[in-house]
Image (cartoon, rainbow, N blue to C red; front, side, top):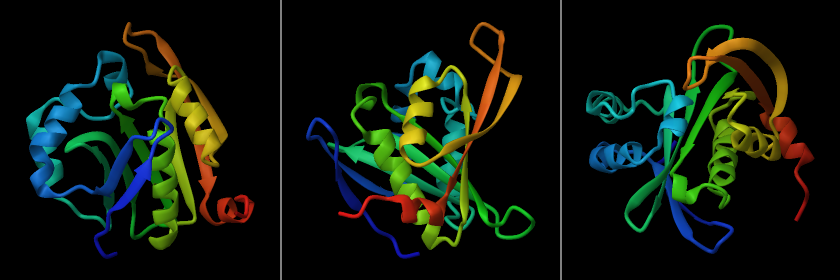
Length: 187
């Protein structure tokens, strides 16, 4: 896939650039993740405040395995979305989607913009279905993924822990990439 960038406009008129992550984004990625609050960090799989984690990401970009899509506004990263893929095996037609949005850009449509872009890219990568694993307490994320064409396929009770160490549910949502295109309203 050739490199690209796209401009998006959020609900409040803010313009953002969507583009793949590059190695030179290290400092901006560190600043982005340092700006997340404890609640947002709860839902992430990696210790993103550890510079070694960011170093690994920017120094090992392989867009055929993980496609890292960034949203940038006024020279600052305000959103990070990744599409995780497998090239072989029984899950090679599936992709996993993960999205993080800066606190001051939440509820402006950026999450939806990033998810919709990843669904579009999934088709170009030859993926048939996308999976999102969402903590039950991330109600905003559940709504955004639902609006983007994902539906709940499974609930795993007491599988994950909240900030206080209490068990909570994990929701698995799935989007049929080609089916979503058929259901999309015609403009």
